[in-house]
Image 1: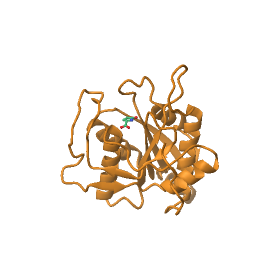
Image 2: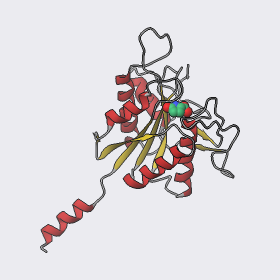
Image 3: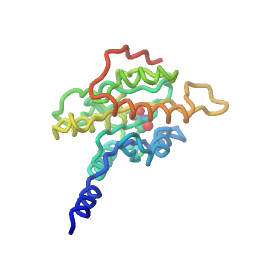
Image 4: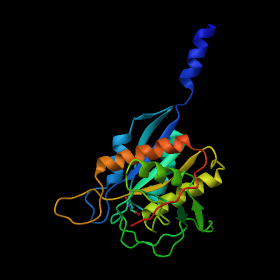
Length: 229
Ligand code: PCA
């Protein structure tokens, strides 16, 4: 084999850098989960040197974590951004902290409703997001997209997945090279229904900006995190 050919083969074998974006299936009495639609719409997009790969997680304690693990193993991403719906919020909210607790207000999609149960028995109480949450909020606000840092992802399946992700990253010692975190998005507007919401197209744009900001920042910026309504 000549030199030129070998060089080409090497290039072809080098894994492409990916950003894994996950959304959830609908749950509870929410017929639509914008997080799933956002992930779908971003799938395949090229952001600088990275390609976005979308994944869908079941809204089920346990299985959601396993599926996320499988997706990470399959795609070997540089960044993992998990998305979920926070009905009632009107801002895009990067989450600051994942808590080691499952305490479900409603049953998950498999009918399970854990109460006061750790996500990981013996695990630390909490993990910080390794996404640049302040820089993301600043970038969104600069584009007039409502955004704020959230201090809790709740204690339902979203927090469960977020904690599981950060626990796996910390344990693998991959925290520095593989960064991850969670962003909650508002519900989409429904005609005749009065509640906080954000058009889907804005949330899609917001998550794209969050990805671009993450790829542009290694640390974070000391900006105010805003206020969740
Ligand atoms: N939101 C729920 C779980 C799935 C989703 O999209 C939550 O905030 O826990």
